[in-house]
Image 1 (cartoon, rainbow, N blue to C red):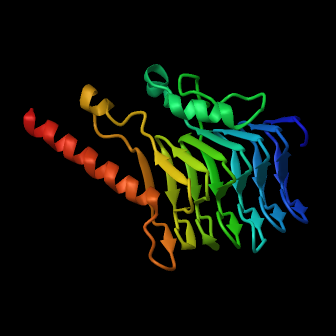
Image 2: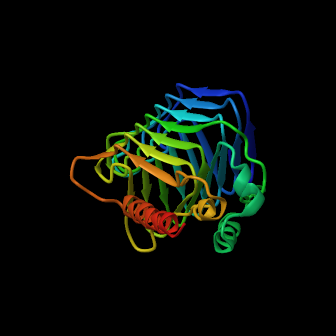
Length: 275
């Protein structure tokens, strides 16, 4: 898909394809857009270099919704990566899983994030807002493999990942760095309520690997303070479970997650004692 083109898929399979270089399953190139909705399965595709399942490259955008599965794809290149999804050269990857009715009624993405996303790519699809209804269903990035970085997802070259809702990044493996997610220089990942990183493995950063100048991975909880106001149990902000690194490595994602959970528990206890 090339030169400001657009692809929209629903209820379709992209399976058992291969590419000599990039984009074993789907290649979105040069300000192109791909929208994938319920029933799309991108499975068992191979790229010799990078982006085994889907690659968005040069100001392109990928948007995947609940009910989409990207699984068992591989990127075999020694210098590239992104077994499941590759976002490169000022591209945007948006993963929207599950249903966040409560936050849709109350909060949107931070203004600075929306401004950054709007200026990042020149495509027909604007970044979504939690104030827009999200399709129900789980979005999975499962069992993908990369020899180099980002077995599940890789971001490079000032690219952006927005993930929220029931997004499961699980069982991605073999990567040199970033089993679930790799964020490389000048790129940014934003993970909001409901995202799960589980059972991923890599030599460094089993769950996530953030490396280089200007690389950021931020956890933003739309529902973080609501229990204090509504007298309900704490929400699951983000979970990083049973990820494995052959060399011990605490990724920035895991560190932030630990700090958020600790801070939230302190607030919850303080409120409980005060009442």
